[in-house]
Every structure is written in C-alpha cells, then in structure tokens.
Image 1 (cartoon, one colour):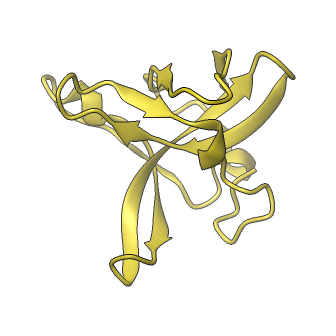
Image 2 (cartoon, one colour):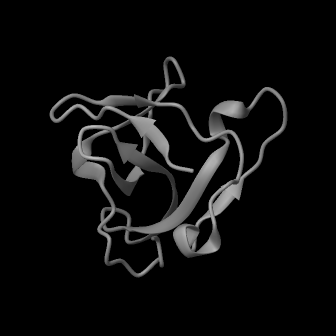
Image 3 (cartoon, helix red, strand yellow):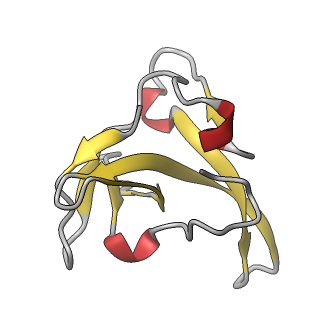
Amino acid sequence: MAVQLFLHETNPTHVHHCPKDDLPHHIKGDTWFYQVSQGFEDQQGYIVSLQNNSIGHNENTHIEFIRNQHDNEDDWYRLEQNLENHFWYMYTTQKVPRENKWGLG
C-alpha cells in the first residue's frame, strides 16, 4: 500500500518508511525491501539500484511508493536522509518517471 502524504511543492516532505514489504511485484519491479536488525530501523525500506552520473556507476537508493493526497496519484520517489536526525525526506522533483527501466509501477 502506498504511503499517504500531503506533498509540499517546494519544501521537503518528511516520509515515514513503510514498515513492511507489502507491495505486489508489478508495483515493486526491481526494488527490494531492506529488512534490518533492531536499532537500525532508519535504514529499513525499499531500495533500487539507480544510475548516479556524478560517480559513474549505480548506487543503491532508498525510494518509497507514495500517494500524493492532493491529487490521489501513486508514484515512486527517491528519498534523502538527514544525517543529523536520521529522518527521511523527499521533494516532488524526486519523482521516479512512470516509464522507467526498473519496472517500477
């Protein structure tokens, strides 16, 4: 099930990771759910290997399937973690295109 959020157009939106792997394969595509040990819950969630042009190879990237409560659209978004408080955030500009090579639905 998509995480339900009201997305800010210009400011980052705080995201709570989905606590369990509950998406069907046709939505997940090439993602995998990273299950962690107690004490490392801030790293748990969906991950996909995306091309990072600045380093010249793929890197594992945290993503989340989010329903934007403003328009009821479900999309995948790349996440960024604040290293001071370990919270996850996303911007609307970090939406993964619906037509993509990772099979994300």
